Structure formats: C-alpha cells, structure tokens
Length: 356
Image (spheres, rainbow, N blue to C red):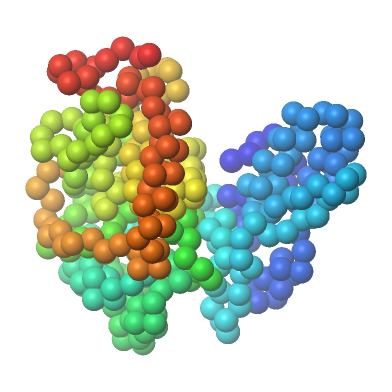
C-alpha cells in the first residue's frame, strides 16, 4: 500500500461497484487522482523531480496514466473501462475490483481459479472441490474474458459455478479483456476472506482434501509459500522440479501463501504476460527477508490427493508472442533476483550460499 502522500488514497480498498458508480468513475478520474496530478504539475514547475516521480507512481498505482503537455497534463485510464452489463460488472483492471482485503479474514482458505478456456477442465476441478473441500473454504472464479463455451458453463443456472462448495457459492468476477495470470490472481485475491490463499490451475483434479494440508503447512512461521510441486535451481537461471527435500520456489499451478503476506508484499506484477517465471518471482518475493532474519522457506507438501492433467496454454496468445512474453518475464525475474543466491536452498554442494 502507498502510505506517503494523500491520506485518502487507498488503491487496495475500492467501494462496491454498481452501474451508477461505474458511470461516475468512467466519466473521469476520482478526486484523489486529480489532486495528485495537480500536485505533480506543481512539483514539476518547482523542478522537484523526485516528488513528481513519486506522484506519478501514485497515480499509476491507482490505474491512471498521465501525459505531460507542456505545463499541463492529460489523464486517461491505464486499462479498459469497466462495463456494466445488466447487474453484472465486467472489470477492465484488477485494481478496479472492489477489495475485501481491508476486512478481517473470516475463513480458513480462499481458492482463486482463473477461468478462460476448456470448460471441461474447470468443471472437473470444481466437482473435485465440491466433493472434498473442507468447511471454511471460499472459491473465487475469475472469468478472465472467457471463451463462449466457458461463459456458457459459468452462466448455466445449475452449472458447476453455481453449486455451493463447502457450503458457499463460488464468487465469479468478470473481466472485459484477458488480464493474464498475474492480473487474474490479483483480481481474485482482492475478494479473498481466507487466512490462507491458494492459486490453483484447472489442470488440477482433487481426489481428496487438498486444502487442509496446505493450510497446516503454513502454520510453520518459517514457511512463506507451500504447494505440491517444488522448483529448485543452482544458478537462478534454470529451474527444475525438485523430487525431494527443500525447494527454492513453488510451482504456480498449486501455490498457497498467507493473505497477510499478499497484502504486505503484493500485488503480483502484471507485467508478467504469462504464467512463465511468475511463480518463481512470487515465491522469491514471499521468501525474501529484506536482509533481516534469513530467507523464509518454500515447502513442498507431499502426497496431496490429486491428479494432474496436461495444463493448457492461453489460447488468446499466439505462439510467437508467447515466446517474447516468456523471455521478458525471465529478464524481469533476473533483474530483481538474479544476484540473490542467498535465496537458494543450496549451491549444488549441499550448503546454503552466502549472500553476494
């Protein structure tokens, strides 16, 4: 959360949206954004570039783009406008989704699931959760500009997205355009009420309770992120699946962490255009101790009752574009963590390396 500057600006908490409020928002920037933009213009006139840069970051964190025009400026939304579709709202940006992160966590776990293509995969996952999820489980479905077939499944009156799971009906959040893995995760996590939050891919099929073991693994305060598949590296450039022992990161297809850590360290960086490298980046963000007590741990939770099916690529991204996005994601990870060998479990010789 941004704590400096305008005391009333809380990008993590947005009032509930309806058609009328959306119309007001879409007519122009809210007062706090306009106030920050005018303050930035004054800072630029005074040649206080550090303050101008800080205010630009605050404006952009609120979902707006500022373009300088001499001594004046223009503001525009950084992403698509929200759309009121009858009683449904389709959100153009993750930070436009009304947040519950300012409310106390009242449930054990929130599962966030991105729904795009392949409705049979989503149905299989939800059916497994419906059979096995324990009491206190919340499911948030992010309908990330889904395909026509997926939309029909989500909208079916008696379909898998409407039947209760652990006594609670899944919540469905709709987007205007595809936000991608990070954007969809941020969207769903803003609605979470679980102390533990779990990102789960629809390629996972629960055959038993997969929630309770993940929640219990985070009872250990040294654990920052847990999941069924671990990743390990010796050089921070190449990661492979860890078959046993401690791990460096958790595979993003089933990844659990604390809601409080998301509030403190998030949101996920939406410049990651695909899921590639996002899981290692977020694992390291969660584990990073900022030079105080030593890295927190990434923990594999063995023998979870599940079947893994072949994951599906986002059908909206052409193969050549996917290659470019994956490469950019790799460089983004390296830019932040490329020298952080202290976050590796071992240097290949069975010992934790010293920080460089």
